[in-house]
Image (cartoon, rainbow, N blue to C red; front, side, top):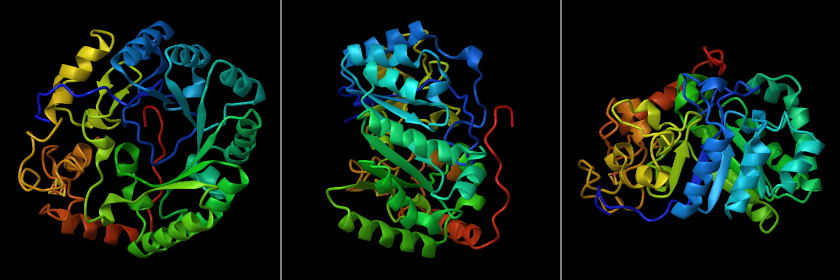
Length: 365
Ligand code: SF4
Ligand code: FES
């Protein structure tokens, strides 16, 4: 696919309904400058975007934030998505949900719920999330989700301050009757990049976690599907971030700006078009931000002549920017990058020195 070629339909729309959230996780992927409620897209604007996304051929909508359940119109947004035939997935911290609201969300067509957990142990989980009582609430809500027959994914973000509990986190997911568990090592954008030294696991911790996941996959085959996202800093090859820039996903931020990924706004040279000004199809097909890194024509060496260029699509542009100062550089997670060794060393050093205090995610922090 050349840089200018129009892609096929996006698979999914990631709808960041709000940046408001009662939790303060230090690895939040939201931008450092969080948007306030007054600038968020309205219900009517979301309705229009949902129709446009379905017309464009998207199959799924992931409702996220911040915490999407702070939006009182979540029911209307889910109903509109369902009417358009989109598969609806709610990505939530769960702490604001109760039986009545879960019942209503299921009634209007919600298909799936993904609840994030900070640990299996309440004290540490609440410390990481910066929200007292959150862990207990999440457990109760997970059970309510299953009691109305909705499928559940447990999302466990792992790092140096909870990785020792991975076995117990897996047991917790089984106990909650989840059908899927995402064991996601922190990816270092947004707030996580700020807190990297407090979160980075050591190589030994990572190797042990990989063994735990491999054993659990075997033991729980047919009962719990486990996705595993490894930290780039110890990888030899980068991940195909977002399945390739502008190929499968579009992300709409609370203001209506359409981004190729949740961290794309860190690439300040890019121009993001908004659903407030233009139809979604036009933005997907021809906005400068999507065209900039779509396909392979933009690639420098060593990606340009690499036989993996249509497998990982050059890795992650936001990480390339964060670590090399230029989003067009080869992702340093790739061992062909001249900066790969220093990335690895940085991780090894940070992970073996005492962790600094967390900088918690807050509006205006
Ligand atoms: Fe991927 Fe580029 Fe590395 Fe090849 S050189 S593996 S395309 S990041
Ligand atoms: Fe933006 Fe990877 S997070 S391209």
